[in-house]
Image 1 (spheres, rainbow, N blue to C red):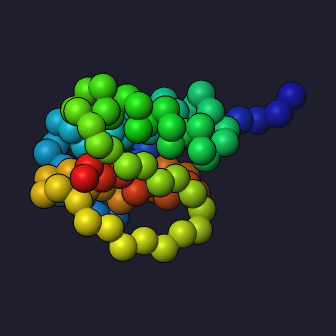
Image 2: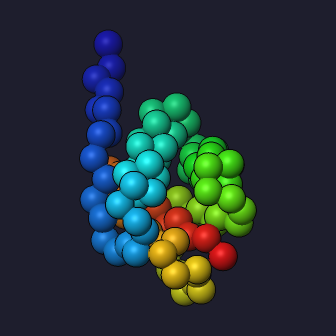
Length: 92
């Protein structure tokens, strides 16, 4: 039987999200990594949930290697890791 690691921790690199939004973003991200294995599917799930909860337009990038330079609404940006997956989440 294969041993599966359950990821339960987000490691924050940068954020200006309000604490309650940040907590929800982390919860949704962890749920997404448990449900989906493809990075695009994780990002799609997270974007849809954030748009529903906090209004459009959220942008979500999930991957193991990427560069970025984004403009975002003040108070709506987070960059963090769950395991080896990097998450860049922002509203614009």
